[in-house]
Each structure stands twice: as C-alpha cells, then as structure tokens.
Image (cartoon, rainbow, N blue to C red):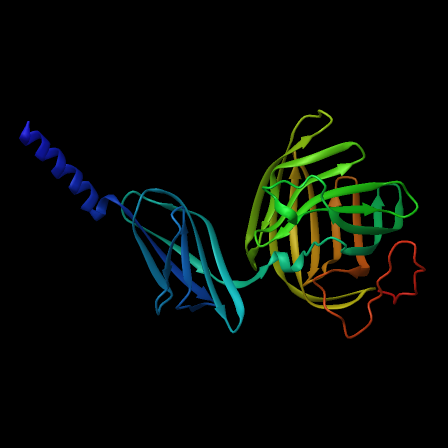
Amino acid sequence: MRLSTALVITAVVGLICNPALAGDLRCHVTKDGANVAGADVTLTPGGTTLTAVARGACVFTGLAAGKYRVEAQKTIGEILYMAIVDEVIVPATGEVEANLPMGQAIRISDYLPVEVGDYWQYHDTLRTATAVISRTRRERATRATHTTILLGDRLRVIEVTWPGTSDMIRNLVKSSSDGYAMYGEGRGTELLSYNPPLLLPNLLPMGYTLVIESTIKHSNGAPDQQVKMECTVVGFADVTVPAGTFEDCVRLECKQKVDGQRGKMIWWLAKDVGRVRALERKPGWASRRTLEEYKTAASKPASSPRPIIWPGWKRPLLPTP
C-alpha cells in the first residue's frame, strides 16, 4: 500500500513539473512593423498580465490546453494603442505564437455620449424601391423610467421622432466606461429586446473586427430572431455636415445579419458629439443622415457657431452640405 501511494505521488508531481505536458504562448507586439517594448499583454481567461521586453516579446508558460484571448496595450505620446486576438488555441504540449500588431484605439463612450437632455437633429433621406423621402429626424435622450440596480442610472431612452408624423422609436441604450450597449427598441406597443445586449466595448483598436451575437426577443410573441454584427473601426476623417466641420471623426462600419437578412451601417462619430453622418442599408431601403443641430452635455463650445434648435423654435438658415 505504501509503495502504491508513493508511486501515485511521484506520478502526480511528474505531471505538474514536466513542462512538456503544458503549452506555452509566445506573444510578439509590433506597431507599424517595429517591435514594441513595454506593452502590457493580458491573457484571458486568467487575467495574467506580462510586459513585452525589448523585442516586443513575452511568453506565457505552463498554460492548460484551450482557447485564450490576448490583448496588448501601450500609451505612446498620450495616444492609446491596442491589439486584440480573440482566439488563440494553446496545445497541451509545445508552443504557439500570437502576433499583436497595435493600432490606435478609441474609447467608444467618448464618441457615443448619451446624457439626459442630449439632442440631435438630422436631415434624413430614405430611399425605397418606389420612393425617395426627405425628412427631418430628431433624437432626444431621456431617463429610463424602469432603470434597474444592475444597470444603474446610466440607462437612457433615445426618443426618435420625425416632425409632422406620429412615428416614434424608443432606443434603450447605455454609454459608460464599459462601452456602448443597446438593450432594446420600442415601436408603439411592441418592444424588441436584445439578449444579451449588443455591446461595443469601450476600447476598440483600429482595424479590429468585433463580432457581436444576440437574440432578438419580441414582446408581441413573434418568434425569436438571431442577430450577428461585425463591427470594425476603419479609420479617422474630417467630416463636414450642416452642423459644421468635425475633425478626426471615427468611421465605424458594421455588417449585420438577422435570420439571414443582411444589412450594413456606417457611422462617422465625432468626439463628445456622437453620430454626425450615418448610412444604413437593409433589404428594401437605405437611409442617409447628416447632422444639422445638436446639444450634448459632453460637447465643448465651438469656435464656429453650431445652432441648437429645440422642437417648436423657429429654425434658422443652415449652410448647405
């Protein structure tokens, strides 16, 4: 009996100590093709963080076989750079490498601010197979009346209206340090909810494609729908619209598929303002929106006037696009 116990203990110790029975993950961090030292590289699950050395390398050793997510971050000259690899397969033995080319990252909550009282007005052109409709679209952020402890007081309702019509859409959203989350959409008495919410995480590097999957629940009892979105920060550009010229707008492109039906949206986002231009295409229609007027708690006074017109006020002449 003692001999058997000793053999078992010896075998277990051998399994733990033998590096050949655990996988290693070698990470290589670069920026514009050059090695980057000093970047923080984080591995999940586990949450272990290592710092890349002179050649932009770090090695996670003794990992259990499975799927891992790797993220690298470094602030250079007050600009945050990031790289994300969503899935790396670490083998039970041997070594695998993850390349992490960093690009400039944005904090999405800075580009999609939502506070109570924020207001945006757009010129909206809707094209269908039979008509082209030009109209005004207004969006106003209000406080959600059914805020839960879990969501806190950051939950907002964006009321979307078109003057001269009785149409209204109520978008339930949250913009915070966690990112920008879309919880649902109300049309009349019907409520569509996303389970889980459609979440754009707060830190997104340029060129990285984020995949979001959710189930659409219908309050009227209609069958659930599966939604998948692929969103990419494409780059930065100056954008001129009737509300003014906005520098270094983020161009965010999202491909969407709902039960096999494909769509696409492109947003140009200005820091502290939100969407200044938007293109959306779905089967049977396309919409183009340009910002005319806005007021956000996050925005700073502009050097050139940007009129803020609330519903019911006389609308001034605006510059042409």
